Length: 206
Image (cartoon, rainbow, N blue to C red; front, side, top):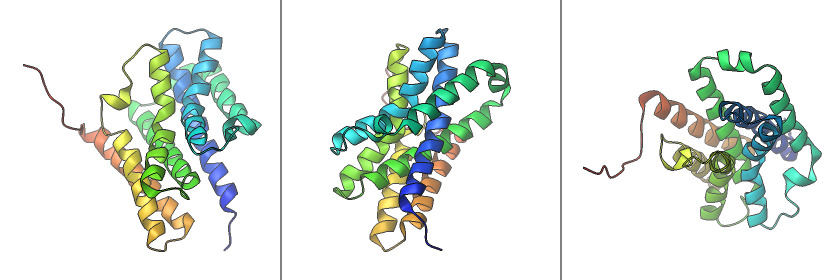
């Protein structure tokens, strides 16, 4: 069955935007920000990574600025989180982690696919930036050291997913199959790492 790769890419991008919008709004509420701060954090968490990616590959204006669907999706996630925060707060931490891993996988795949025509190494890096850029901006707004730099296998999972996608494309897999392989690798690695508390090596000061 033939599919429209542009529609698939847009669907993955919007799904990731919605999930990360909720995450950004939740972080804003926990940071005691007001409604405006919540909207800004949701927008930044959901879209900053994609904006950076598009600027770096010369796709201007960035797709998330040019296409109203992105902002609408991020703000819808923020409003829903604001009015139904008690329901979001009641969700099990493991479920939130799984949803976050899903958003990371969607963004890593969408970002890598969009940058695929450039050098593979840079495409993988840009896929990673798409996945973790918004969360980094969120943490900076909240005056925290970005989580991606200090905890769990997070950016590493996004990078792994990007590499798997590119490798699958290089050996002849269809874009859809490669996207599922890359997204699955990112998702599984992130969930397993969070469950088993895996971290990259670090120097521990005595």
